[in-house]
Length: 297
Image 1: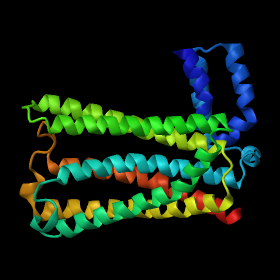
Image 2 (image 1 turned 90 degrees about the vertical axis):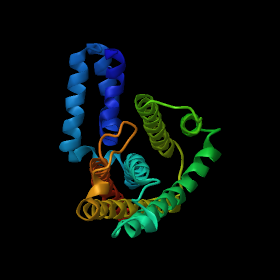
Image 3 (image 1 turned 180 degrees about the horizontal axis):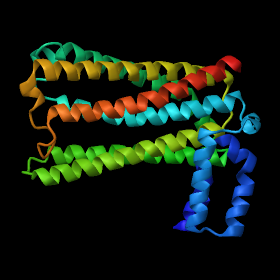
């Protein structure tokens, strides 16, 4: 295990460091052995490299690479954010928390969240489509692009298979205990998160393995701005929704939520909002860096 972690640890470093010192780190691991101390030293070095980057290595990464890095970070934040959005949807699905039956502003706020989710999703698709097409066209000639394509296709197929199994389970008509429901939902969530991580990793590898025209990168950068703006808007509307729910519909806020009836709706929404805000902040920083790279490039 330590040997595998030691080989993977250099991947924690920023791209510029990997390009400048990657060979040295690999040689160091080979000579010093893959001990837990080696892994810890590499991890500490990676953290220091992110917090206190050296100006001397900045030249190892050009404007196009910075755009690629920013897009990969935004995509990762979008995947996690989307899972929180799915949890929000399931929390309010089929109850008096959406539509015209919802009290106060809950109905319009819910509709606004759905509209922004659609805008963000379209932006992600529009930005990724040219990159995916380029990867598919170049997959035969570039082994790394081919591996990235297979990883992406496999991740999507696994997600669709897990979702189909979840739908069949939910509509089987059999009586299920709350514990079993929770286990199945937890398993699906783990698979969904893993598939999302696989897609992000495939995108990150693929975008560095192919030649991407500058206009396609710029389009993806613009779409990333739209996606992050949608994320911020959804988080703001979710906060407003939560406040309106707690203040104006206390009975609904305290109703049980989830397969086991715990936590309540209010707590579920707080958790969703916390994840959303936690993803909006790094996504905003990444898209700002991407925008600077576009302007400077």
